[in-house]
Image 1 (cartoon, rainbow, N blue to C red):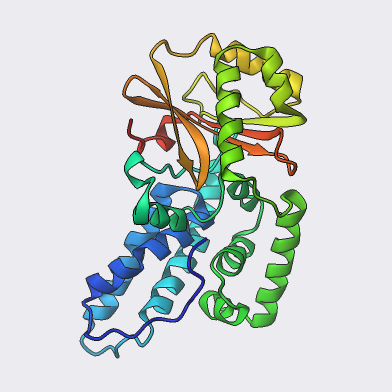
Image 2 (image 1 turned 30 degrees about the vertical axis):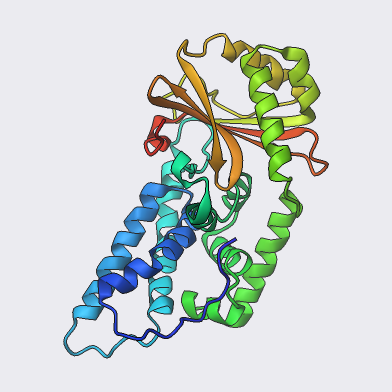
Length: 311
């Protein structure tokens, strides 16, 4: 999880506006991405935040910003809240299921300090992101700020321009909604890795019996192709028998040059598929609370959401 300390350490020497923004860019990206689920929209908001910050810093008669971090967070978060309306309109005409754009760790960021930076950026799992999509923009902002980043309700109220009482009410509604749909648990990463590898081997090996042993009876397959991929259906598929048979059928039409890489997606061990050098799909499985069965499968094949992937 990202650092929840919101105090800004004193700097020995003044920083330029660019240095200040760069110092906080990772935090801003993570905040906005968790509110929007889209890398492109997140980058747009960060660009708008930078322009507002640069303009404010360059104003000759403007007083210095006493707390740059708080100022930048306020601009970015409110920009993200406003952007949700445009995203909602796009989703109304989206073909098939919509899933958040995955953040995939590259092989060079799987060890050392770089891995910790990725973990901070990928603050919530893809499965949690799906649940957050069901919140209102303000509920989601409050949940992300408080539950993920540790902001106090009084700080959140100042960021959003709401009263602390209103923020507490939003937080209560969001927390109850999220916990009702996703109980508090997180499978051991090693177990998740093992189950993911077994699932992929069974699915692409056409082993129906092995798949049925892995899948929970009420498993759901979510496929996001954006109308641009034949590997994604128009709606979610429910039930272990339906899901297993569909996966086995799809495996027979997989590209001949398909290769599989196991990487971290939004912090969780997952599978990334390539057709030659081109990204083909991101496959993320979520486990039951007991950790022994697959409860949800998230299959992202929309090429627009795979543009940042490298083999």
